[in-house]
Length: 349
Image (cartoon, rainbow, N blue to C red; front, top):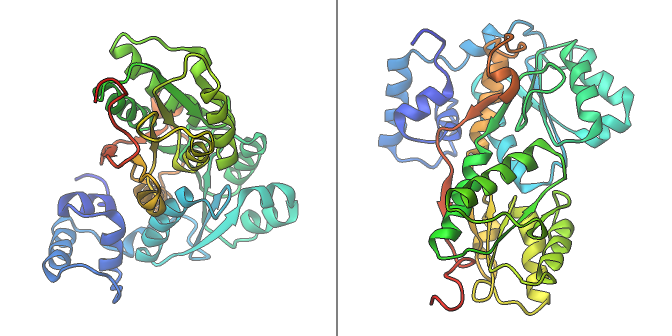
């Protein structure tokens, strides 16, 4: 290949995750992988000419030996996967990862200045959320050091990496349609946020592919937290007619939505099927276990690190589709995990 081989290239060829490749190549003694898997990873890395510390040497401003990752709400289980992937990739490249909380940086100008303007880090990853202050802070950071947006479209002239949210939403709704549902509602996140819009686009696309109508009264967008999911589900359950299935934009919102259904005495999935984007360890142990569509969040973090280290964090050229859409990580594709929260609608069982 003409470009420098990345962790993702090794992972794809070896048919394992990016985080596992990173841990194996960094000599992590705690890694749980079969000897033959570890040998295959090393062999693939050698075949591709991948050198774990080569990327670090290629970093244009390699002074601090550290990269920054800014997320909104560090305790969010969805963000934990991004952090894990970025941490593994940074470690494999001989870099330290510094984690910061976006609202705290927005509220504390001195903390932001210390992070981006004192040589403390060599590059910055910023998880987009749609907050008003994101554009301003990201643009300021990009004027001082290589910066890339994570899980976002390009904003303020800063390049971005994101997942195939439209495909994930389409797959979720397609699952409900295949079960026989025709009355499917949508619970989104923050209104107007590009992530909300991408998932809504996938929802609408799946309905229209099957000539199903989009009903405005079954579309509720509030926020990216469990209380918002609770309020949104309560609104949908009060609708007449009521939907037989609900697609929820992420698992955190879905936790609140499931609680609202339970409190209203609506049995899931017997009376209402629920599916969400993203997966987390706790949703497999809920009552009922939640059906989800998994996206490669760890790879998103790892790829963001690789773009910084390879010097690819500059603005996309004019006319490049990435200027508008960002780099979409579509491999591996979204994966449907069917559990106990979805079934055929009443009357079809």
